[in-house]
Image 1 (cartoon, rainbow, N blue to C red):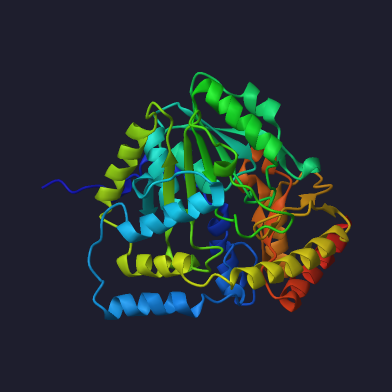
Image 2: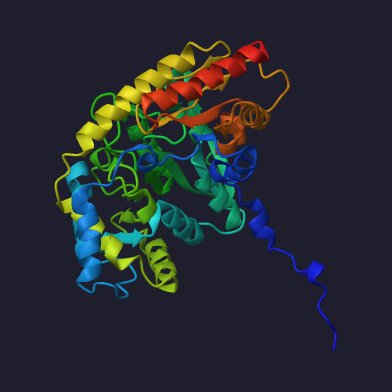
Length: 405
C-alpha cells in the first residue's frame, strides 16, 4: 500500500493571501515575555470598560430559560426587528427586519459579503488605509482590493476625485468605513453625498461599516442612511455590538441591505443568506443579550464615550510632543495612527518589531491596513487607563530618542 508523503500536503493557494497584522504579531510578542503592553487590539473590555450588567443578565437568563437551541439562520426575528428599528432611528430610513441578517461579529459579515459579491478579478474600492479583513477577504475570494486615497492633512477625508478615477469595468462596490479604522477619521457630509452620487450614476453598491457610530468625539455623527434618502443607490451596511455595547468577545454583528427600486441587491442578499444557512445560526443566547443591549438602558454609552475622549486627548497630545512622530487627532473609534518621520530606509514593520523587542510594547504597522496609504505609520489603541497609557508612551518617547529622531 502506497503511503502519502506528508510533505506533499499543501495549504490552499487562497489561504496564502490572508494577513491580519493586528493579531499576527501577537505570536512575536509572546516570545518577548509576559510584560508586553498590548496596544494592538481594539478591545475596550480588556481595559476596564465592563459589559453592562443588564446585558450579562440577559445572557445568563436566556441560558437558564432553555434558550440554547439552534435559532433561525438569519438571526432571531425579534433581534432583527430591533436592529432595523435602531438603523431607522439613526437614519430616518425604512429598513425592514427582513433586510437584516445577524452574523457572528462584523468579521463574519465581511466574509459572507465578499464571498457573495466577488468573483475572480473583481475589484473592491476601499479607503486607504482600511480595516484589514476587507483587504484579506477580497483577496481570499479572488478579488482585487483597490485603495482610494484619504487625505491625512484633512483628517483622513476621502479624496473623492481619486475614488472616481479608480472606478473601472471590474469595480463591484465602494467601501466606506465611517468612523474609520485605523485612522479615526470621519467622512464629512459633502464627501458622503458625492460618493452616493458617484455610486448611483454607476449603479454600484456602497458597503458601509459604521460600527463606531456611537463612539465619536467631534459633533454629531451622521450615518449614510440619513444622507441617502432616496432609492437610487444600493447600500449594504455592517455594524455590531462589540464596541459601543462592550460585547467584544460575544461575537455579534449584522448586515443590512437598503435596496433600490429595481431590487438590485436581491441576488447578493440571497447569497449571504445561503452562507448563513451553511454555518447554521449565530449564538442563540448571545442574540438575546444583543436584544437587551438594543432595547434596554443605554445610558452607559455616554460615560464610556467621555472617558474615551479623555484618554484620546491625553494620548494624542503626548504622541504629538514626541520628536519624529506626527498624528492627526481622531474624531471617532479608539485608535491613534501616527506618521513615522525619518524611517531612514526601514519599513513600518521593522519599526514596530524594533519597538516591541526593545520596549515590550506592541503596536500595529500601518502597512497592514493598506500598503499604499498606510505605510510609514503605526496604529495604537488609546484604550488603556491613563497611567498605563502614560507608561507605554514614555517607552515610545524613549525609543524615539534612542533612534535619534
